[in-house]
Length: 242
Image: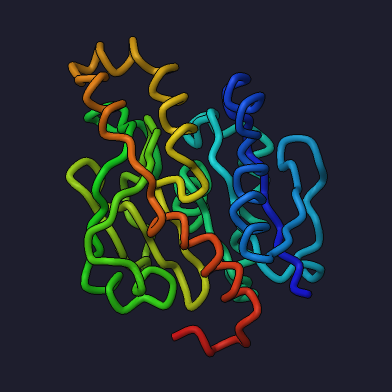
């Protein structure tokens, strides 16, 4: 059985944890329903595991900010560079997306247009439509998002797989089996609504129509399918993923 590791980089809001589970639990719920198992490593409190003992990594979201350069977060960067050099399958989500881009010589920071939250359309690029992970998705699909920071500068040699009106770098590919996405494939519609309820004041201050955002929350089966597709790719021999 391949060892898939969930790298935990933060905690969800307490009410989300109580009602739905923390970030790593949301990942595990999706994977378990499809018959996959994953261990959890809390990057904030545990020593970095040996990459030789791991077959694939997925990196969670966080309420931390990559640009704050917290010591635990900075320690992950050379570890991720080694994982990339080993051609270890990687999937970063939200904070994980921004962290991977920064680790691979891109730039992440606060988005000049502010926070993006809610269920929004994501559009595949030409590269995304032929990608082994994202290519099975519709050209346009909906996904749950909540982030104040984004990838601001593309890392060298990275491919852009998806975009939307807010963010030109919604999904990136760094190598044969290394991806990251700004959106949350692990979120359910109730989790997204709970996040919007927490962000009412911040979103209203940005001039956003919060009732409309809440009304617009829907299920996102296409986005959610990425986690299980990635878990399946962890077991694909090197060089066979396109």
